[in-house]
Image 1 (cartoon, rainbow, N blue to C red):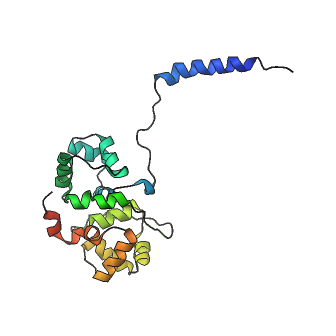
Image 2: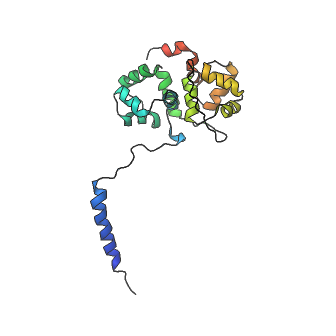
Image 3: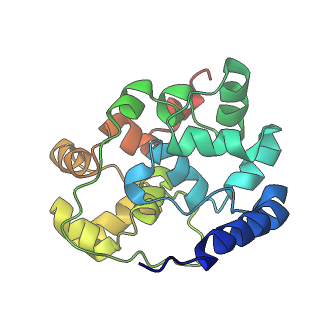
Length: 199
């Protein structure tokens, strides 16, 4: 029975290659693009996306590492008291909205009936709901689809986004059930006084 004498030499050759190149360290992208199901702090990411603030820029503004901010968003890590205060002050929301521990523990996944696509508009709205708009961006939901799935006319849903218009309690309940986020957080932008609480 013939033996393959070249096989050990191939293994040795690959071993040398590995030591020469891989031993020096492989450059891998530090942060891979996460799946939507891996997002743990959807509210924080929603506000950042609505305001077009990258995680790296947010980290620079707070003087923390990008890895720390990434852990807050994707791993439901709770920052230190000092960093919570800095984050809340910078974004203008209290802790119970940006870092709601009960919501982070549940980490619910949105039940999206079908694929959808958020269409970003360049026009700025002075009273825009950053949380609700950002959630549509996080989940890539079009206004038409989100309104239909919640059970409201797209024009009505658009008023929630662009005018911070507070819906009726029954519609708040529907939106809460769809996004799986408490209405007090979901519609926090409709209550300016709720954003003025102590951080």
